[in-house]
Image (cartoon, rainbow, N blue to C red; front, side, top):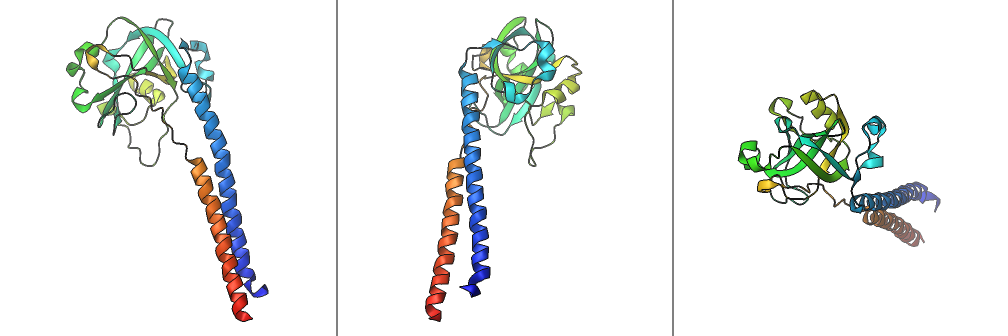
Length: 241
């Protein structure tokens, strides 16, 4: 057995690594299930008033993301922005298009960017959906959302074209010179808009949870590695005898 020391040590290290990754995935599973439970509780709760403006600087996404809220004010359609989506999500369905992000000037003071919903490319121009440019006082019910993360594949925003690739209230506020804008946005619920556009309910509510399958895969790899190493050493020992 001594002559197989290097092989057995390597196999032991490999098994240990696979097992540790499997247990890490189980911890991630517990975290994800807790996250999904919190999201469901917030999403399904009756809409509550928006947090007061003086609390906005202290809010953190973990504390409010997907919270169901109601807010009142009037839209500033002259400052609507276009968030590109390669495929429609939520209630809209369909192919590529844009989510319409419009500042809502609150009756209580301050401004919140509202994701009013999805439009296909041919409806990007407000002139193609005039009925949906609602004037005057409105009540919006929706889900609070934190800033959207970027990754290596996210294109750079194009402020000169008013074209955006992530949901970023701070960037939109800077672009439109809105000093009173909230650090979060609100995705409007799927209530129909006049003329049918934008289509609300754009929030992605199906969050992948594959951690259990990942954990089982790592544990299976650990068992396979241990079995292959054991069989190899046993056969070599049998041959040597």
